[in-house]
Length: 67
Image 1: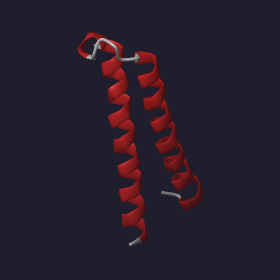
Image 2: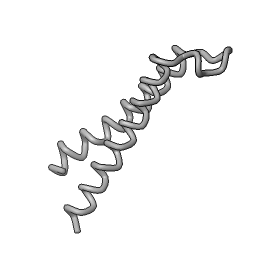
Image 3: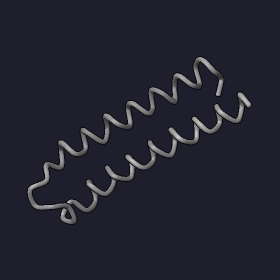
Image 4: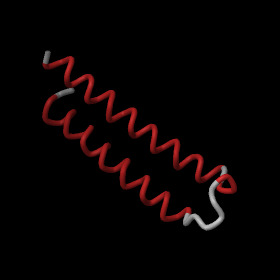
């Protein structure tokens, strides 16, 4: 059970990181598709913060629980 739960957490955090990484890619490659008044830099910073949060959680899983 332990391994199943740890593996699920790892996949979950990895998928969320990828989701927000792809958001940054869209902002970097297609900024014209975003509303005119969007602050792209602020949006990228927000996405990076989310990635950092999930990346930290993933690191803690691997460090303390050998996921």
